[in-house]
Image (cartoon, rainbow, N blue to C red; front, side):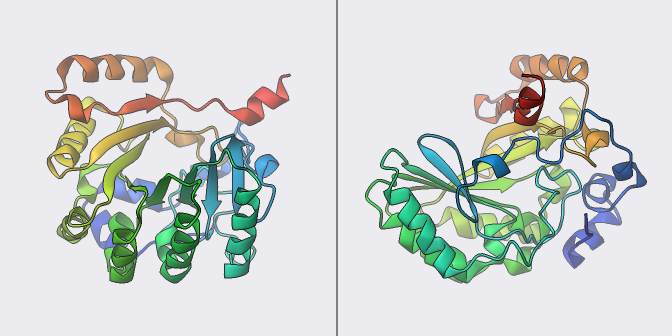
Length: 285
């Protein structure tokens, strides 16, 4: 996996070991077990057309790009996240997605991910306009780390486009540690709060980064104070090259129970999610 680190994160990493561990490569990435998978969620199997994945009847995942502002070393899609050339999506590709969705009337939710859709703002704006014009689409989700990993890339044109969406529009901001709540990121959050976007967050439970009650409490409390609903905290997927980030479950469960008992505000109780490794289920059938 290639290395890409924004100047913003390079500066933060000088004083934050948690940020440095997320983005700077480690020799441990080359040590992986036979248990690990290149595509743990079998997304390739469920991709009928380029840039689109459908694993569930009512929602689809749209990968507008395989590029990001910076590359997280624990990325589930590290198998292809740096394959920027083959991952390029055009307006014609988006039009093909529209045609596919129209043939599946049960689909009502679009999830923009990648890569990071905010690094291709013009294409995102085009796709938002196209998808939001479909009567069957009632929910739109956009997952991004741009406000955290490289705030200067945040585009005002995208904010304007957000305000024109009639459907429920959720923006999922990917936070791992309180050190990511910088003044630059906070300014973007304040701009987003002036729109009709519903702000939620997602996190990945990472060994040596946020695998402590104190860190998660500080992060989730601050997010709730900022008007961002902590939504998911994922168990790190069993992806090849990222196993050193995985926290053993016997450590995680006590932390989960402590969160329920001690977190002072119910709004900061994020859903703890362990995604079944579809590749593993397929292997052992």
